Image (cartoon, rainbow, N blue to C red):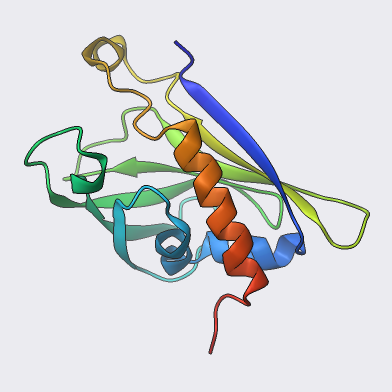
Length: 161
């Protein structure tokens, strides 16, 4: 089984506009296709180590009965302005288990388009987590759908004042 998923979409927008959505905690909620991200708290991130909180709801996935609502802490792992942002998540004061999510942006020379790659990487989680199954939690289809929502969100001028 492949524990790393990457999917790319060409978005007709400048990398800076796309990256602004990805740095904003509310931007993550706005583009989420899984239905799990309900709300967020925190300021837009600008460096490795920056953090924010996301209020989650596992119910939309339907994979863990009664898990319901919970919070995760998002910590920026990699940050290269307008090019790369990745993060790890932790919950209930526990350390991250080794997976990460993120986006890589590759601006095109043509008409301000940007190739945006969504990354979901569970390769480095401990074997005991792999053995439990159910990883990666987010499917390639959900990543593709999120990129579609990101495209629409940026073209509509996120954030609107």
